[in-house]
Image 1 (cartoon, rainbow, N blue to C red):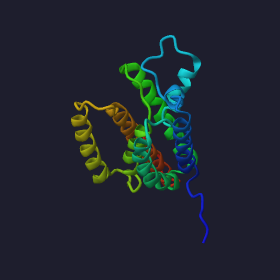
Image 2: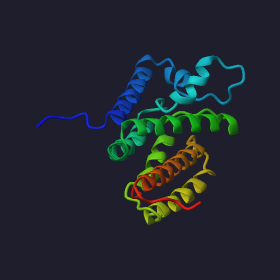
Image 3: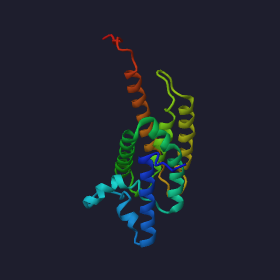
Image 4: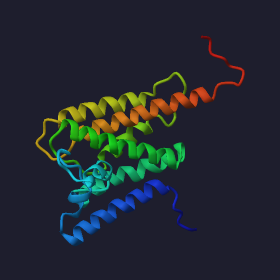
Length: 197
């Protein structure tokens, strides 16, 4: 029996994030914060600041932060990559990183680092894996309710967790799920089907 690199996008992402964490820990130079965190604002920032709008999903504050995120990413991600394909999942992950980074800069004055936006995008998107045309899965409704209640309660806690990134990531996952489901159901129509105008 051999080990297979079964989910190239998810596994490469996990390895890259672990490498960033390892380099940051070994160097002790704040490497992750300088390159893999969204700054509080982009006023007078160097071009690398704009790159950080994407790369922040590779940086983590410590191993506990990284492991908490990637325990879920490595659980859910391969299922999504198998269902939707590597390139579409990569596009969804990059889009979510950009959306959470830009929204953070526009609406908050705090920095942002970590994969939690990607995690919540995957959690919400996974609710759509067995959706049928014209139906909303009860699992999606329950995840939304649990997720929104938890994030609303957590928003008032004095911690360093960005509930804003969680909500933005979850919104991206929901949007991707609805768009993909709608396009899939339209492509599944019979060849002789014509919409009335």
